[in-house]
Length: 129
Image 1 (cartoon, helix red, strand yellow):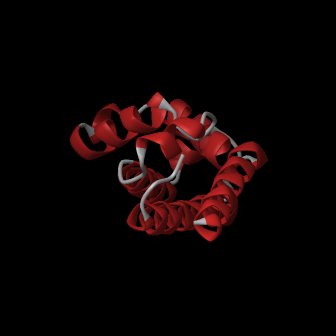
Image 2 (cartoon, rainbow, N blue to C red; image 1 turned 135 degrees about the vertical axis):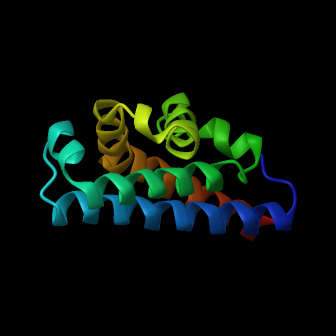
């Protein structure tokens, strides 16, 4: 599944950063008391922060090996790519219902667990080489 040490290091570093960004998204939602897409739409600081973090997460995901990214079914969402494109190129067209749902997905236990398990699998594969 994993072939080169450089890839181990890159994937490991990216997943660790992605998990930190997901924690940051959760902190923003909590600190701004965002409980719905309307709350997100009404919080200027949360809107800008969350969309930037989602852009960062997407950019990091592009650095992952294809095999790693394909193993992350819950995380690897076309919505993430679309959110990044809109946030970067057409900010006024953002659908904050979709952004909020994407945040809920990323900050949910299933995606975090999937990323942690992938990180552990990379580490174990690296040890066995």
